[in-house]
Image (tube, rainbow, N blue to C red; front, top):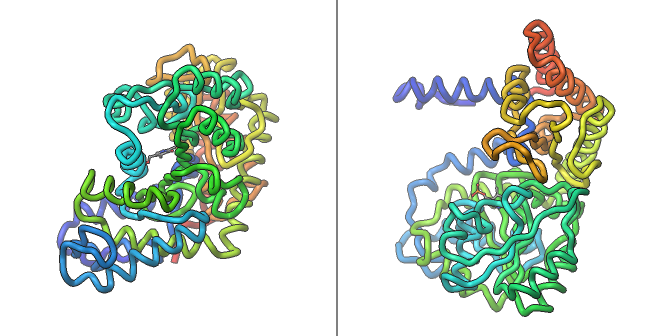
Length: 413
Ligand SMILES: *Cc1c(COP(=O)(O)O)cnc(C)c1O
């Protein structure tokens, strides 16, 4: 990667970027929400578009000189609508949390009721956590997952009938089963609620047709672009035509100023990439790899919340090993595997310590890992957990991780 100019101007930042590149190249990335974008996406994000103010929307801007910006943003919108089969797309949200915030703003008044998945059960902060805007300004009721790691739709329905929310949110940050959008819409219709499907995690699988689509069921679909969709960091909101004006107004002037047009160009490139047959192959391999990892871990005697995964991620349940998520995530980092601690259902530990580790396969699949590599990763993880106090063993496991990284180079050209 070319850092020629940064190196001249700011060697400290150049050194840190270089070191980060090496870290990414030399570690096995299992953080389920991360991925490695194409160089084409990065070029768009690092382009002259960062210089441009473009408040407003295509052909209705508050600044002049937006001819090329309009072309770029309209391409991003069109590609998002085509890929996800939705009427309207706003590609300006700076992040997934802001995409959700705009839907709240477009559909509700402060104090209105929302029904969403609880954070400790796999939901997202921006779906109503008490420390987030969503929980501070709205009346949030939540549903969770059962002992099989699945949403209990009858429980969701009962809660919807009891609380009569204005908005129901489905979609999660840590849920390993297929989401039944049709069922959610039936529940929403029964109580007169609107449905938001937040597909931040599974967007790549939905785009590839490997997870059912919320199109036709959810009036609003939000996503991040940087997770399984493999684009730049950012958000997109899609909706039925009748809500288009309200959504656009909520994004600007409701909560954002000038859009990040360099990132929007990156989103456009990623959306084009995601429509290609190669992406379908990629998404299919993500799922195969997740299944191989889950099976490998279970074969080593470890537990997975809900058993076999149906998508790109899983939660390793450490309760019977007597170890914590916090300690084991650090041990995994020691052996060259990056992952995050996560609560398991009814976790006896605090959210800062936890009894689980969330593992996902989008990033390693991008660099070419296949099922047999995931089996080796499962063995490394299990050995690291069972011999977490043995420095020599951990050194050997670090070397095994390194071997996998060298087998599948990242950004090597
Ligand atoms: C990651 C995520 C978000 C938020 O994305 P940011 O870009 O980090 O704000 C929102 N919803 C869900 C379900 C997510 O997993």
